[in-house]
Length: 141
Image (cartoon, rainbow, N blue to C red; front, side, top):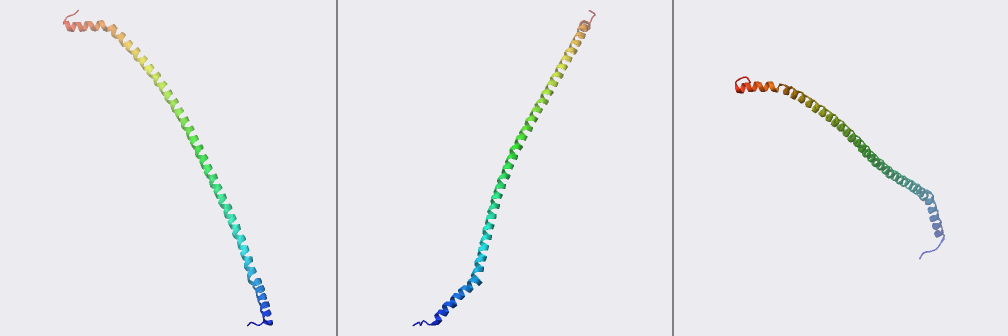
C-alpha cells in the first residue's frame, strides 16, 4: 500500500514548481514565438493576396488597354484605307478626264487632218483621173 506522508506534499509542490519553471523558461517563449510567427505568416498571406489582386487588376487593365489600342488601330487603319481609296478614285477620275480630253483632241485633229487631206485629194482627183485614164487607154484624153 501507499502511505500518505509528507513526501507526497513535497512531490506535489516539486511538480508545481517544475511546471511553473517550465512555463516561464520553455512554454511562454515558445508561445510568444508561435504567436509572432502566426502574425507574420498572416501578414505575409495578406500581402500575397493583395499582390495577387493587384496583379490581376493590372493584367485586366493591361488587356483592356491592349484591346482598346487594337480597336483604335483598326479604326485608324480603316480611315487611312478609306482616304487612300478616295484619293485613288480622284486620281483615276482625273486621269480618265485627261485621257478623254486628249482622245477628243486627237479625234478632232484626225478629223481636221482627214478633211484637209480629203479636200487636197478632191482638188487633184481630176488630175489623177486623167493620168490613170491615159495610162489605161494609152492615149491622151
